Amino acid sequence: SKGKTIAIVGSGLIGRSWAMVFLSGGYKVKVYDNQPGQASRAITDISRKQVEELQEAQMLRGKLSATEQLSLLSSHEDLSQALEGAFFVQECVFEELEAKKSVFQAVEKLVGEEVVLSSSTSCLMPSNVFSLVQNRTRCIISHPVNPPYYVRLVELVPHPETLPVVMDMAYELMTEVGQAPVRIRKEIDGFALNRVQYAIIAECWRLVKDGVISVKDIDLVMSEGLGMRYAFIGPIETMHLNAPEGLEDYLRRYREGMKRVLSSFGPVPEFDGEAAARINKEICELIPNDQEHLSARRERRDQLLMGLAKLKK
Ligand code: NAD
Image (tube, rainbow, N blue to C red; front, top):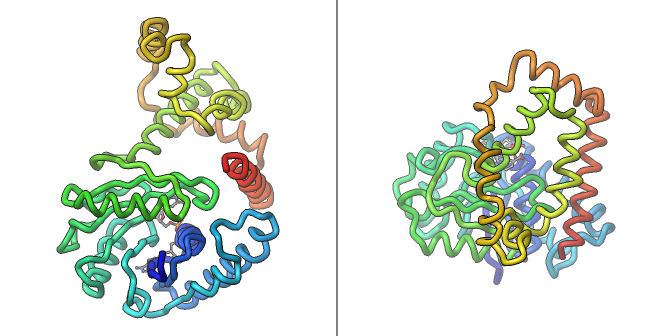
């Protein structure tokens, strides 16, 4: 990192997580938010998490101590001040196209030509997000997964005009700070993660809706079945390992079966009406949807992910 600076624009959930990830790599991190007081609240929140929770759990990432990392962090109420000296800008404002477009337009006016402009958007297309930027060759989407500190994947998605060196630079940066980047070669709705996630959600939904399986049991199909291996190997490697002679052997054995099952899938669900009411009732019987129960389950999820992240190290 050699004392280099990264600016974070938008200091909510994801802005804070990015700040912690970049600090762990030894970068100076300058946080900006357009809501007065929000950036300094972010700093307080990060300090508490880093010093008390991560250090105690021995989960603090990087070579620097919590105190050393926190000394690299600052909050700014003024955008130009926050951007000063930054070589990389990570935008983390609300998931609203107009907000992102105007943020990047404003940022571009305040930084040099060589500064990389990166967005955290989950499902907006680069062509839209960067449409008001003049020089789009340095624009990229770096889509994290929540919580990024434990779930390391970052999808890098280029604008059609993005230079390959920018993609390479983002890839190296993400690797250096301990994330796991993947290159999406051209923009596509949902990128890769959400396309796969939605395919899974759709089939789980159809199976419950059609009375084939309960909510509790379909979630177990993932958490006790597929999920056990997917934390370590992906679906293509799974195919390769699941037949004695590898992928081609797998295809010989299972091609027809896969095609038969796949062609029996139903249409895209509506995700509303009677089915939604019924599925909601079933999940709420397992986990009531009040804040107390939801927070407890989120806490449990983060603890378990922390354990898994440790195991994967
Ligand atoms: P959030 O609501 O927690 O935070 C957004 C922050 O941006 C707020 O602090 C807000 O004050 C600030 N903001 C809004 N407009 C601004 C502006 N014009 N200039 C500066 N700051 C501004 O939202 P989040 O969950 O952190 O999401 C941020 C981005 O990250 C979104 O694009 C979202 O899709 C993406 N993302 C979220 C998740 C997730 O699970 N939460 C996962 C991956 C990506």
